[in-house]
Length: 610
Ligand code: G6P
Image 1: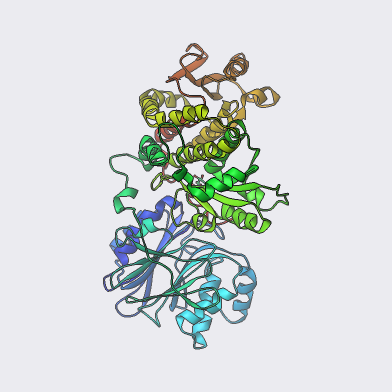
Image 2: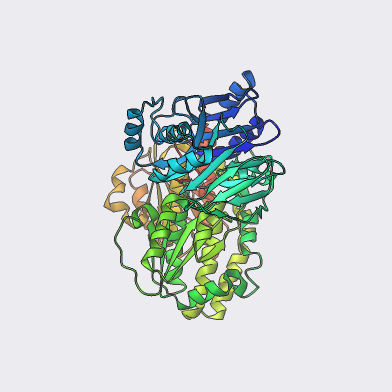
């Protein structure tokens, strides 16, 4: 989704803004732009369709410089990704604005502004805001007052950065429903959609609250809450380093993040398990008390995080004996639902900024769930700050749009939660020890699975010229098949559909022929023999099968089957381990097809609009 960077400094800010945009590229976007107040006090801008590199080329040919500036990557919502629709938007060479979010009542405001003589040059919802601010300046407001006045009229979500020729050393920022942080430097201040953009210039951040407006100059940051009262917000030091979000020797962030999983899982477990049990510190006393009283769990999430929730349902019911429902956030938030007594509301999110998940959380708080628990990867994200209880996944920054290490660390954190919840429901010490042991083996077993990469790379060649594919799983492996299909479609653009293998004969079998690769995850479990019968149904129709299986139960690798055998793994952690070959498969298919692996077309890393 759109990315914002802004700066007010003694030094020239253009390079800082461009580097910030590069670091926000992972969020997904289709055009980019930059505006600065130059030495003569004029507002100058460059905009380009496509990558930040295109904007950087324009900047290299015709450099713009100045001490106050804004930059933006746009993920098109209102209006196509054209130069005219790219941000920053400017009103009468006077005010410039960047915006992330959606202004829902923009049409009415636009009509009103047109009535007052404003001419629009884009199809965006954003342009109404910059014109409205300009109108305020014209009647004598300063930039802060004009911005506050303008946002009072807005319905929807926004993070905004505003600068004006009239007040060259000033930058106004506002947030309502979309993320925005203030970066605190020495004699310079910044804004950005997330901390990653600013790590080369500062590690000290103020996380704006909903409704906040910030007034930045070189020397000061003044923050006002939604009622216009001056407020103090703490400055927090990020533990991230600028290098944490860099690619190192890997060709893509996705490859780096796939290979980081053994270390990431070890981090998720660090200090949270002993040889025998999940430690009390893992979730903290408050969460433990809540889980002790819990009678049910409602999970809400989007995308890959939703798949983690689907896996967790098998665990909550199978291990902890707790009824568990799982729903995608965009559906949950608009549905009337009953809240059974003693239900914990559990959200799962890598970014902690996904608009639908956040909205569902806010709705849940109104509806009186027993407690809200977030499993999240980004400290200080909105989800973390607004939930009663939090369990951090500690995956480290995930940059590739297709989620990998975030997913497997979510599963690990969920299993810790399930074990903690299960104790109260009669999970005995022996079973707990077995589960904890299985978790502790994960990093090593993951290394073994990752060692299969070259075999999987060869397999990927079979997929390059295919247009469709099926992914099959049974039981807890069905959500893993869903995740495998999602990975393939996200980055290789091959249509991939997941089915519970038992449902095959109720429809998708009609699609099976020699052009339809069918991928299956088949660890050793109670359902593997039934799954093998389902595979026979595919084979009998000439379908080509790609099976990831345990050596002990794998079908023979012959004409109809390509079998990749995985090490023997514990049944409970099998979904975590069987995810890895599917990630690698999708990755190598995408590399062979030459797609943009880390920033696939039309997708965004952090979906901050509905
Ligand atoms: C986007 C991303 C996915 C992610 C989903 C949910 O669609 O491209 O990778 O799974 O959002 O994001 P969250 O940050 O809430 O986990």
